[in-house]
Amino acid sequence: MEGPGPKGVGALSPDHIARLAAMRRTYEYGGLDEVDLAADWLTQFQDWLDDAVGAGLSEPNAMIAATASRDAVPSARTVLLKAVDGHGFVFFTHYTSRKGRQVLENPVASLVFPWHPIQRQVLVTGAVEQIPDVESDGYFASRPRGAQLGAAASQQSAVIGSRAELESARDALAARYPDKVPRPPTWGGFRVIPDSVEFWQGRPDRLHDRLRFRLADGGAWVVERLAP
Image 1: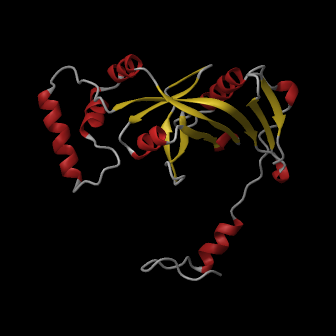
Image 2: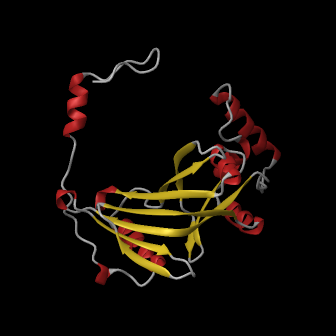
């Protein structure tokens, strides 16, 4: 067993370690065969997203977005997919947040849709671009007023003194903008333009199915099976 962690941080008890080691489940939901795969990644993604919605998953559009700084220091968090088409996957954030700064410094990202209840994942990699302001304006205007005020009040990822400080900023903005809340210039959308979209289906004995659409040289998409 490894020694204790950083100063002030202990180690898990042997009982906790044993319980973690014993946590496992059998994946028997189904399989994924090449003959059943859609002709393109977007159609396959839409089919699986529909399945996730139909299965009643909580927030099926939630995805883990991993980015890295200019110096290759990684970070990851859960964000919500708000649009997808043949050009890519769109999410919204503050450009000055940690992920926003990292994307602007190093415009690549990876996404994971962790649809555990139906034993599926979708994994995406690709370049990232900032979407046009008019598209960010349109989405911001469609958000509930509370979400608009929250976005405008928060200096996302900055250290703050208390929750009261955040709520006070929100209340001040609510008084300032009793009707339309303008989109903050530092808030908007990013599009992940995929060069790889992998569809992962859990299978028994950890022999999972992994079929990947990969953008090859010349611009054609190829389908590859990956070892689990």
